[in-house]
Every structure is written in C-alpha cells, then in structure tokens.
Length: 126
Image 1 (cartoon, one colour):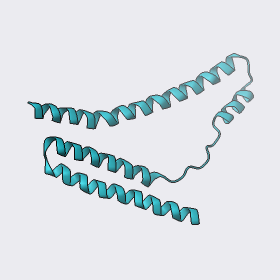
Image 2 (cartoon, rainbow, N blue to C red):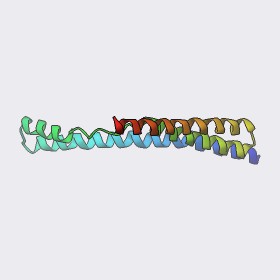
Image 3 (cartoon, rainbow, N blue to C red):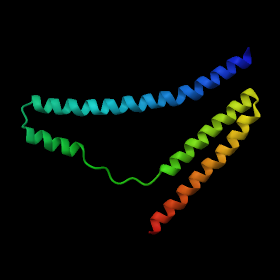
Image 4 (cartoon, helix red, strand yellow):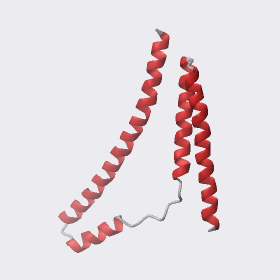
C-alpha cells in the first residue's frame, strides 16, 4: 500500500510539475499580450490618432538586445534535472533500471553543458 502511494506521488510530481510550469508560462504570455492590447485600446479611446498609436506600438515592440546562445546550457540542465528525478524515483521504488537511466542522463546533461561552454568560449574569441 505504501509503495503504491509513493509511486503515485512520484508520478504526480514528475508529470504535474512540468505541466504546471508550462501553464504558468502560457498564462503569463497571454496576460502580457492582453495588457498590450488594453493600452492600445485606451490610447484609441483617448482620441489619439492612428499614427500616434502605431508609434506607441513600435516603441513597445522594440527589439531586445541579442541573447547569448544558451540552448545547450538549458538543455543540459533540463536533462540533468530529469536524470535527478529518475534517480529519486529509482531510490524510492527500488528499481535499478531507473538508477542506470539517471546515470546515463546525468552524463549526457553534463556533456551538453560542456558543449555550451566550449561553444561560448569560441564565440567570444571569434
């Protein structure tokens, strides 16, 4: 009975955690877009001309400075996090296959971080 509860709790955390984070990101993007359109609507209601509103939109949509290339870094940490989750599951339910998967994932995640580090150093010298 306790093993079933542990397995169920672990599965809920492993599946529910990323789903909750994805929902938070989606809701935040929607909220930001909604605020933008409310500002445009308020500007039009206050009697501003279309040219002024277009200028305001261009100011609001100014390009952000270029970001550093962190794709490998992020992917590495995601893989490391999933590996640690697999390690926890393996320790809780006592399945050696989960421990092996955690070890392989950890090595793969560290390799991705190493690739990011090498590429980041190369981009600075180029």
